[in-house]
Amino acid sequence: MQARNIGLDVSVPEKECTDPHCPFHGNLPVRGQVLTGKVISTAMTRSVVVAREYQQYIPKYERKATKIKKYHVHVPDCIELRVGDTVRFAECRKLAKTISFVVVEKVKQ
Image (cartoon, rainbow, N blue to C red; front, side):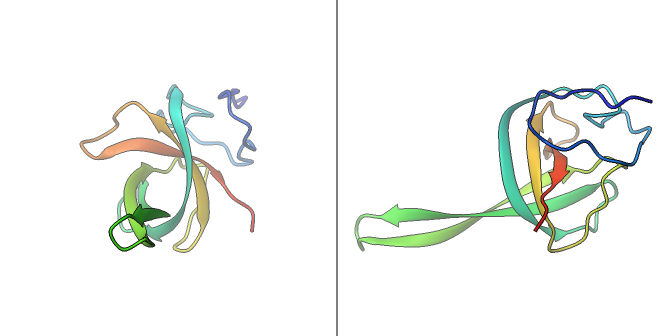
């Protein structure tokens, strides 16, 4: 089965899968934001929790504070992830109540 072009500059997974929610081998279109974060939990089936750190300026104290935002992200069967991996994930349609993103690439470190 040929992996389809998803319109992003990411590497295609070497492994093939039969997941219908895979942007490469299934029918899931990706659109919108493309973000990068670190995997902090793999306890869910076919999903992970990814954390993104960013700094927010607080005018009252004239300082920056580090904030963390967590995303629940779907992982296709063709991508293997562990806690601590850095991933690139893209916005897609809602797959569950809290899942609106899908992993498109494991970033090489």
